[in-house]
Image (cartoon, rainbow, N blue to C red; front, side, top):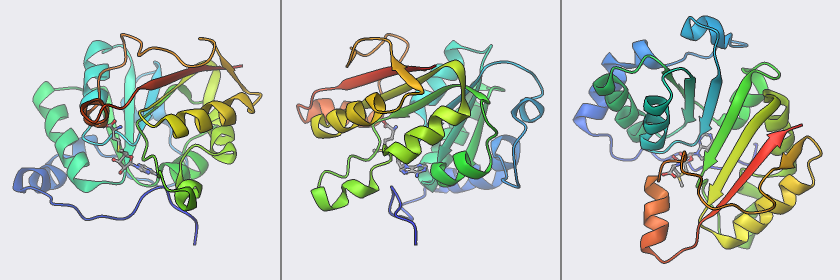
Length: 218
Ligand SMILES: C[S@@+](CC[C@H](N)C(=O)[O-])C[C@H]1O[C@@H](n2cnc3c(N)ncnc32)[C@H](O)[C@@H]1O
């Protein structure tokens, strides 16, 4: 059994989220069946951005609304969040967002071709604070190497966390990956283009600090 970065939770799916999964999934959901051709999927050739672990999807919607000229793919496993995102995509009539419900590690490994993405975002991934759970953290050297393979040369990787210990771990793993170069000299302030996320607001309420990390693929 692989070590996963999430625990399968059914969570409470509201009536409207369940309805969205039935009615809207065919319009915005991506069914996985081998390698994806992202330009065919969106019907145009333009920048492709991936958000891993979008939660309720509000940051993804904000980015897609600010950049209608780019296409956005969100990947998460959590059904209530996916339902919430589908409702928001439909309400905003966005044609540049699509959704994958699967483990991002498998999607990156099996369904995305090399150098197909202009940016990958990973905002406030589960911190797994207990030491014995650190192996479940998404940011590990193998995964970071996989991210590098899927981003085009010159493309961007943007991470953020509200856990200092995870932030230090992220920095150490990223600095050891020769394919990425940090272009803000260590941690950065939240760039204005990154929307505030739900988990970030929770962290701020708890008095946590926020650490952003910005890398370019060499
Ligand atoms: C702590 S929440 C953060 C959500 C959002 N980014 C935010 O800042 O509000 C982490 C999210 O990552 C998702 N997640 C964890 N591991 C994942 C994986 N391997 N593949 C896809 N999604 C994953 C969880 O389901 C959850 O929605």
